[in-house]
Amino acid sequence: MADSKEKLFADFTAPTRQEWRDKIEVDLKGADYEKKMVWRTNEGFSMQPFYLKEDVDKLPTVNALPGEFPFVRGNKKDNNAWYVRQNIVVTDPKEANAKALDILNKGIDSLGFRIPGDKVSAEFIETLLDGICCDIVEVSFRTCQRHVLELADILVAYYDKKGYDREKIVGGIGFDPIERMLMKGKDTTMLLPDMPKLVEKLKDFPGLRCVMVHSDLLCNSGAYVYQELGYALAWGKEYLEQLINAGVPVDLAAKKIKFYMGIGGNYFMEIAKFRAARMLWAQIVKQYEPKCDCACKMVINAATTTYNMTVFDSYVNMLRSQTETMSAALAGVHSVVVTPFDVPYETPTEFAERIARNQQLLLKEECHFDKIVDVSGGSYFVEELTVAIAKEAWKLFLAVEEEGGFLAAVKEGKIQEAINGTDASRHANAGKRKEFLLGTNQFPNFTETSEGKEPLACDCTCKHSSDPDVPALKTSRLASDFETLRLTTEKAAKQPIAFMLTIGNLAMRQARAQFSCNFLAAAGYKVIDNLGFPTVEEGVEAAVKAGADIVVLCSSDDEYADYGIPAFNALKAADPKAIFIIAGAPACSEDLKAAGIENFIHVRVDQLKTLKELNAKLGI
Image (cartoon, rainbow, N blue to C red; front, side, top):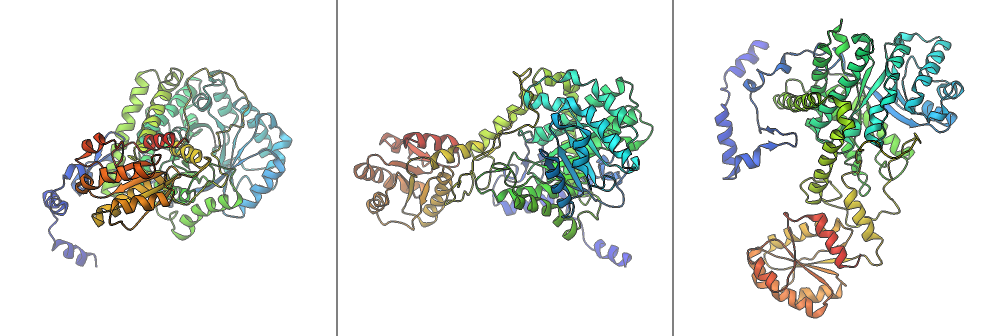
């Protein structure tokens, strides 16, 4: 059978690169190949529309094997199983325990408890873990950094009291003082000496990791993929080196570090990110000459991002987090947290948490993603993307190291400045619709209202507060500017009405009416589309009758010279307060402006800025 297949394929001549290019250019019908087909990423490199075997033969990743250094293809050889994790914020230990026991029967096999620092006690932990088999379930904890050592002692005593085999305990205790510096601007470097003490307390628990790198914070602050990866590597290396300098053996130090990474919305980019992360981290640890390559394994808990989540059309968040979860699962991470779809505006409901659990269970039980190791391995595109991301992340990592390391860069505010700059750029791009958010700045639900939903502010269970010692990251979601605008409109005394005055060329008026409806509905305006009017006078009459606050003339560029000024004058005579808009940027724009027409909407205008200006004119 194999021979017959080989003969079959031998009968076909592989197309050359030029032949592929020629075919694409024919299909493009004269459009520019570079502009239409080449993907220029935010990470600083370009991806071609197709690759050949000869392109990837030279890449180092294609010769790697699953479960072997540098672990680009995953830490395991025989399966791709990951932990399905759900986090629980603990206020009452009995309630949290009951919830944990309940969700363990619903598919969860990894629990993450967040405990207030002033609640840490042996009695609290015993109540919290009652009935939970900690040698079967992965259990992780987070608390105030000042109470981490105390929590470690309590947990060690609890595990020994229960008679657990220390080899079977899997989970961790979150110690990451740099995270708080980035989140709150609080200098916590005085806690760093606790890190080797914590490792010493847990050295006999090989499955417990306690030094955490929470680069998901960067992802949720708008970082590009290469930024999250490059800074995560520098962050992890900072902790690794501090542990080694404190006398902790390199193998032990590396095996106590765990990475908490975000999962962004770029499907293939995220798959490649996790593959590149393992490869680069393995190379970093290798430089410290560990006794075993197993110390070079990068253990990653991945969480779907909140950055692209929305308050309006919130069920779309399920689609976003589903593709994100697929990226992480296919990339072979250790565990995954799916953020419930309603997180932007409320404490997750039982329904939202159930859906979040089932999103992972669907991939496991029905799609069998846990059965095959590194499905994307060998894909020309993914292999190229993995190496390209690795190169850019490595450049950033080296730049941070040359400037004194990650901690020094955080103290100087350089990391925060870079991420906040990216965040500002992405918010600007969203405002100009260069970055789309379905249901927000693209295809909003015309009839949706907030129904009392308000965006939630970020909360931290640790209550220490003071003036910031260093700059902090900004963590506003990408949709936040549009949501603020839409909520402001919704709270106005009257919902503005935008009326489409469609006339002339059928295809152009329909296309521009659809564009204008989507454009204006993003502000919460009521949009009224129409099939077309024989004259501008009839269109204006219908608009006034409908109580329109905004009238949008939708036609072709050539016809605006005939329809624009008459429509403007007719509306001005019928309702001087109504705002007149031209949908497009016709060649006769200057003539239209000279006649007093001020407003034009098209793909090149800043949507957010324009809508804010319209609100101001409407008195909102």
